[in-house]
Image (cartoon, rainbow, N blue to C red; front, side):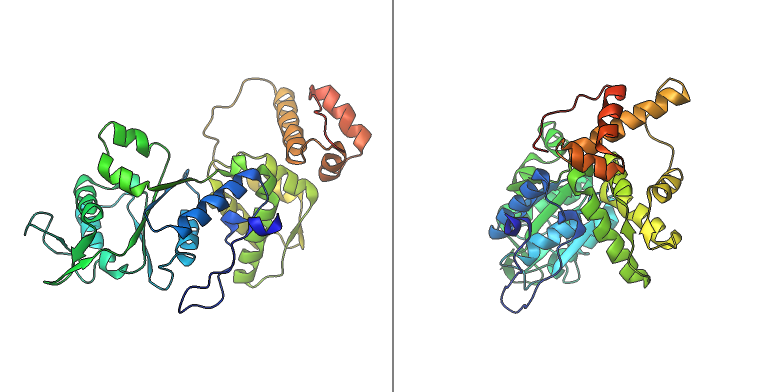
Length: 339
């Protein structure tokens, strides 16, 4: 089963070796296994790919993994951010200063310096593709439909793979006509749902450790370890900002904690510096809030360890009988598991 959790090293023509597996693919949860399967299937195909992910997900590293294991791996990998861009500027980035669609009629004209031309023979990633303005959608739909473009007087096949990344809801936009339905159909030839971190609680410890290792290496500081209670808390948090939020926290911890081990106290100190929660504060006294957090925290740790009380107790740093007593006090029903 271990082999199924990692990509085999790519070995396309003209390349040797492979890149390390990104933090977004670290873990052993069912969610990441399904994601890996989808990426491998997409890499084996040739059509467009749609990555559907919540904000903060590292879609670029996932798109790069597809590219590196595809038949176009020897070609370039080019990424374009479509979010918050002026439509004219984005059009120049994608197509250059060439004539707009329909002038002259025939195959779409792009500049040699455009990102579409630069990605020829490789992969073009469209980040936040759901924010593509209508003129850019029209021209991309035409290129995807015809399968060719031209940068000179001579027409050429369009041999670039398109990978589009969007937030959930693009399909509904296409159904309502707010996004070109024909372009959506072509972009979603292979559709991959990227699971948010809250659906990968079992992976949080491994992901955080990988991120801390990478940050320590770049910063030139000694590697940091985590206590089991710190890792348990990481697995209990909701992470609305996904990998971007987790990476930001790891960067602050690595640069501010002098000790070789990051403890639960260190984590709580930095979590208090986070922005105000998006959800309103629930009513109740401080004691009620503490009990509510304690219940959710312990239940999350138990779930992370598949309700094995012994493993959960070790992660929490308490004795097994104390965990049974605490669960009864908090009203947590212990599910049966092989313990």
